[in-house]
Length: 285
Ligand code: PMP
Image (cartoon, rainbow, N blue to C red; front, top):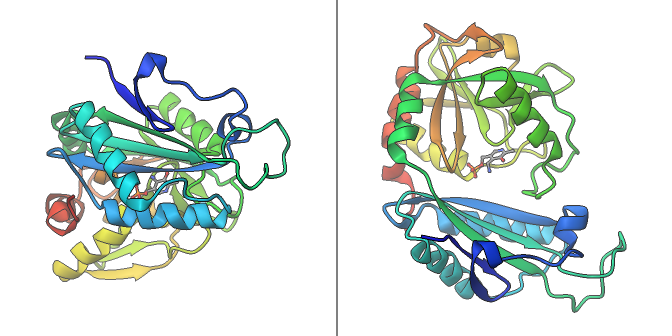
């Protein structure tokens, strides 16, 4: 079955789906995106993802090119047309098509909208979670507005490639003060030997992950203590547990950091319990 993409008002087979060569997303990475988990054919935490999308758009002064209701329909319709039961739906909005010029195009330039959906085998993700993943660390060389979910992801691309070349699945960015900011495509967490669950405060130095936000509810429900503060790489290596969160992986245990085992080198009990409980607290639509 050929995959279907939504592009500016039309559903097309992906091989026929294309954007203009002067789309500002293509030329300048001038756009934003969202990735929503699909589980059992339903979108997970769609409302929160759309809220964050609106914030990203507004920070970049890009208009929402359609009503929120229409956008919701497109997301669900793209999932339906691709028969995705488990996987992700990807949404990208750019500042549209205009003759190449760094400054914004004229105000009536319609933003471009692309939506795709892809399947992810949940059994495979579970197998990865049962083993836990390795991460590597590298200096955070991104701009100072990574709280905006922009499609400009070159540092993240290079970081992820470095991870892959070192046999790891994620890269953690490290600020000049030695603290971990976040992963190339995830938020970073540790569990201290005192059983405190620690993650960085969601200021401008990280993306406020939707999975992170929902996990705060899971923590509360499980009676766990949350501390929002920065932690160093050394602290993470010496921690009882470490894990990452993202829409496509929910809670993924980290068992190795820069080649060193975390805890006993196996997925932690708290991370595993949080993973098991996550979808009881997420919204489905
Ligand atoms: N940080 C970065 C840099 C990311 O790309 C992602 C994934 N979108 C996250 C954090 C996690 O966000 P979410 O839980 O909303 O997927």
